[in-house]
Image (cartoon, rainbow, N blue to C red; front, top):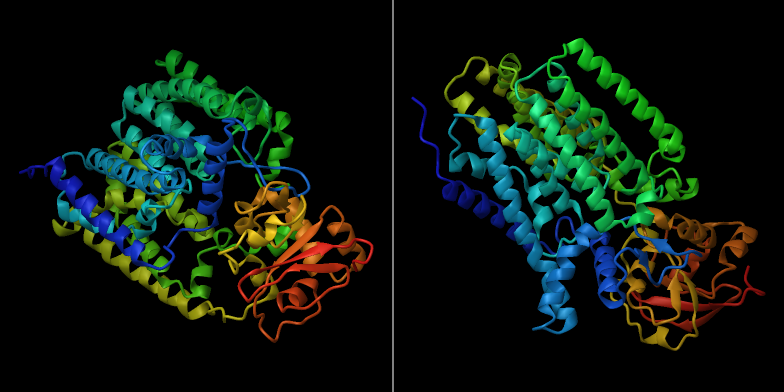
Length: 582
């Protein structure tokens, strides 16, 4: 007998209660689990729009590398905060309205995530009943996902998660309207950022393969998908990029290469879905394969600079001294080195569910349940990407745990192969976790000079001493530059912030502060008028042989005239005398 499904209100209450508890736990933590410099810069981008306008102008004022810093971030993320702030400004002071806007949008996103997750889980489960206990268990295992919805987290990852769930919900519907929803989500995801591009490519390939093999409903899904992608790509580009950026080549942001790719995919797929209804597998595969190869060739010829990836333009020195040291660019082994075992435990639980679901996957292969298989493949790909690069850690739980209710029921009711698969997955995953813990050495906390350049040492900055300076350019470590940015008086600029498009400014920073070559230092500092550095107690074992170390310790340097000094934890500001600088 098929059990009666639990009502939507019960499931939604279970999801929201568990999510709110986890988010509440995050709020109790001093600095929040995820909040970082992305939130700071996003806040600056939104505030500058509210002050100056310019919907298509993404230049961040106050940065001169030399050269302007143009943000790659989408106005799609800014839009709800801008709208909410404008409304709240009728009742509250401007800055208070902005701060409230930064806290009120995340609960709306969390509600959307819960609704989409539950809708997708119910679709995938078919006639199987999903109980509140299943939902509580699934949500309890995804703190790395839910912490993105903490109020004040204004970076784009929470929207990426919601949009990914929108795509998966559309796939789970496995209908023309589902294809429309999935196509909308795919384009919105590219508009938000390129992080999930590899996953979306796998998903699109999965739908195409289902069509090639004549899976029931595949043609309708593909037709809706291609139609939606064509319309949404055009409208999304006009609304959030403008014609000029739609024609530009920006390998690290939604622009001409990706618009061409999405349009090209749709132009290949839509005619095939409409006119190859009665064609055999071989014909469908041949035409789609030829179309895909032609599209790849066009993209390669038209946008050769993007073949090296989105970060190809980063200076090699900046890549070595900054990007390669950022944790999100490293594998899961870095969690072991840093002793961040809560992340390892969360990812291990997701892996257990994925392995334990394999017997059910085999059943769905036999039943040609394409939507189930595509969603599962998406979760597995996200899990594998997380093992290789930890920037993906917030995504796999949201997808893989959609299958927890099925695994739970299968194990409880002793479906064939379910219990052996579950206990084997637990054993293998625990063994892998313990083995890696024994093999990977923990990193000893020994600060290097580069760490002082990237850690937030001076976060509370008094702009008073800067107001007396004549207009000019300031060169500072990129971490300090970010906190100076929204405190600069008119006419002053900083050289860089810790973001990849600020690579030229960071190169100048490394040459000035770390280079032992006086010629390189003088050339790098030539465009600047002032120098700022955070005064801090540097570890005594760090040599005092660089400009950075000497100035942080309160020392002097030829050609630098002290304008402002203060206690540790505050900036020191110098005027540069280029004739005397060494």
